[in-house]
Amino acid sequence: MEVSALTVSQLSNYIKQIFEAEEMLYNVRVLGEISGLSKVRGVAYFTLKDDNAMLSCVCFDAINFNYNNGDSVIVTGNLRYYVKGGKLNFNVSKIEKYGVGELYQKFLELKQKLEQKGYFSPAIKKEIPKTIKRVGVVSSKEGAVIQDIINVGHRRNPYVDIVLYPVKVQGVNAEYEIAKAINYLDNYNVDVIIVARGGGAFEDLQPFNTEQVADAVFNCSKFVVSAVGHETDFTICDFCSDLRAPTPSAAAELIFDNHKDLVIKFKELLLRLSQCVKNIYLDKHENFIDTYKIFYKEYKNFNNKKLEIFKNLIQKFTTSCKVYIDKKLHNFELLASKLNKLNPNEILRLGYATVNKNGNHILSVKNVEVNDNLQITLVDGLLNVIVKDKIGE
Image (cartoon, helix red, strand yellow):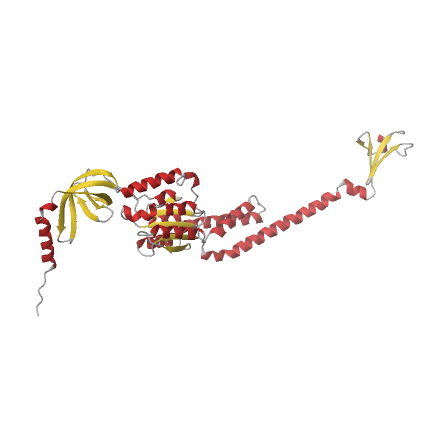
């Protein structure tokens, strides 16, 4: 049995004819707010929206298009239904600025409020940790964002852990999930927190333009990187964070140290350590303790599972240091013993005494006359005597 049906082309062309025949749809003036603006080869594509609806617009003559997301405008043009793409567009022939959009106005008001409270002050920005072993990510578990961070992170340093706290990044109550995630990771064992989502229209980024997220970032004790939207997008989260990255991938490039660079640095330290050990055996021990401290610090911070092979070297170096110190200590004790034997007090303990006259040390009876006053020093005191007689010259 045959079924009567229209083809897709037949139906699409019929819809197109309806729009073209309707005179009310020519030179229509529409008021709305610009969102999702992009320009390609002199053509501007954007969405015109209000609180309840959205309309796709295209302006083919956009060389002098000086409007931005959030601008409230009145556009004049015609509705066109494109059969091949099955899409309805509003072709803009004229555009006039009406005022600042309500959503963008709220963004500016909150920005000014938080700036006055000191949320954006450079003085409170934290320094990026020198050693990063675990990175927390606040983002959607679906989509390309988390995968981009993982790919870049593993390429640059596969030994850094990545912990994802999955959240909604747009929609109702998304801001509360994002704030909760930041607070959770602040008390978790991570060194850095990346707050990320892909690009989107201005209204899609609204959860990141809320006071809830601003408070969470501002009060976070961990280093926070904001990677929200495209390079041209700016959010309240960006201003509050310690570091703003233009994209999630760029955030990973900034946070994850290049493992190859770390390997080169470690090898350089290893050569310094080797030379240091040689200097010890050559009795050139200048600064070897400082060199060891630097190497040991880098060794502890260098997160590489293959470093187990260097444990024996560390043990040998530690043993060498102990042998060197024991040797020097023994030599010191020998010198101290020799020095002690020359100590005048030790000589006096053996029963000897020293004789002085008028502060001068007397070594011979030739330097003494009868009736001279002499001072005789013994181990436990001093004697003042008068010479009554002298024997020998």
